[in-house]
Length: 452
Image (cartoon, rainbow, N blue to C red; front, side, top):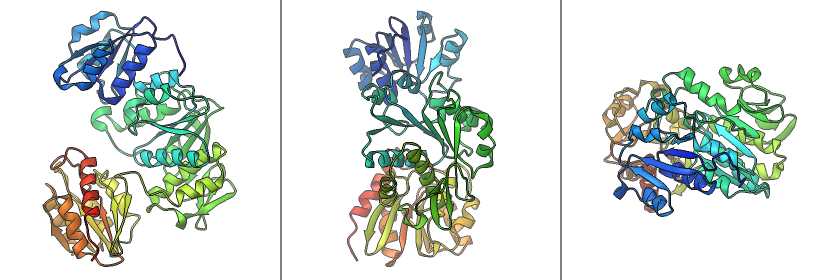
């Protein structure tokens, strides 16, 4: 960890705990800052606050008192999930207190070069692929950021010989000042988080910030399948490295004649990729760009891309029972994510498990994607809407109580050679605390199935 003096003897407010806030507070304390942590959860229900207090860090819990900001703070480190119209954040802005997120702190202390990955879809899979490929080549690549490992914590324990592979959300990128990855990736940009950003333009601007401090010595990997990203290629100082599944891009990664190339070099056959779906071809191309820019061997690239089973809950291949394949895509909490998942399968042998929280929307957008399915099993609040869709397309459809019973029902109906896919197209909160809990119960149900 770089020992910097930016925060020494300065008052710093960490707003919001969770993993990243807790990590930021400890790092700042180690750097000599006078740290105050403010979290809304009451102290007696807040183990993280209790631990920090025991370490000598001031904590204010149970609410967000505006008069706390009268203490002349030099900077606020804001939890990324807290919106900028939050009263504490608005008051800090009015007082001209700089507001950063924890990834900025991570950059300031990191001795390791950073590969930053952002995008609407595919960033977790791409981040994981990149780390796995570098590690397979004998490097030390560490996952960090939005993927579940606080960036400042990982950075504080990393060395110059290692690489931080950092997943970055639009929320995190809103709070950077000097953050500069050596290589950055934007997987794609679709409509998302408009309740937070206020508009699609604001959301896309937040994503684009990943490259704002990059120079001609750095590399920006862009998805040229998207016209909006292609059009931005001339708006960065970084060297643009494109990838595309639809055309040959001579300076990047692309598909031609059923094979994947980087520049003029053949890497592998598309058919040998272990993950299904056009979107996973894009993820693989992005990962290959980073790997080749990092001088990784083709052998390491191919070894990972032919064996990778997926990130948990993201088109995760679970295995087979009675020659029936099972995939867990519980992370598909919206229609677009399920559409992308479905694109990788043959509908004629596919059983789709879907349903969840009813947000008032219909599912007509799914009609083309689910046409000719072998069957559907529906559950949760939206079961009746999904049943209506299936019936309108004359798809066999069955109701089930929850995701576990749905797994067993689909298994009973499926035949050898079929595939069962959990890709709910809905949030989980009608029955489960998180999509992870929903996916874990699906995994448990799969593990409990007996061979027919």
